[in-house]
Length: 167
Image (tube, rainbow, N blue to C red; front, side, top):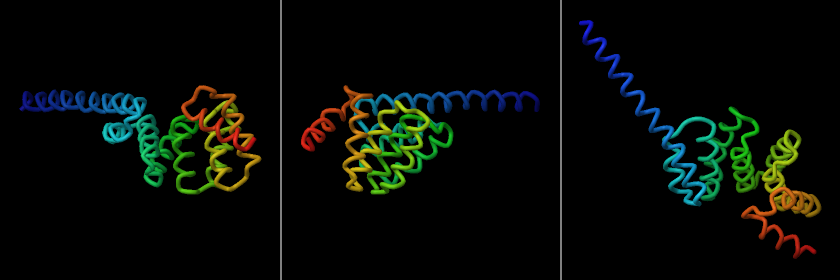
């Protein structure tokens, strides 16, 4: 009887390690796919991962695929665990703007800016929300700050082009 109990306990430990390893591997794989711009593969990998980083990158992957409503919940979950998770905040901003929840996006991004004044993507998504509300003066100010903070970001050329048209 004792041998059987020890064997089952040993088996349980042996099974727990691969599951944890698979979850960690899913997170790293998902982040790698996200960084490569393969958002569908990132989403698939991150669905097997847990924790705030997994939720944040899942939300970001969904938002990049224009699945804005679906992205909102994992973004909020990441922010519950870490209110200043930069990927989670950017994903929430993108999901709210994508759903045309401009007032909430402005509120959430403004809160983030109060906490961390150099968070470039909070300015970017708040600027997008101001654009949606046709408040050009605030949009321009936020986009100019975004460019100062992230001049080499992938979004910078488009923001520069938009600002130059407003001239």
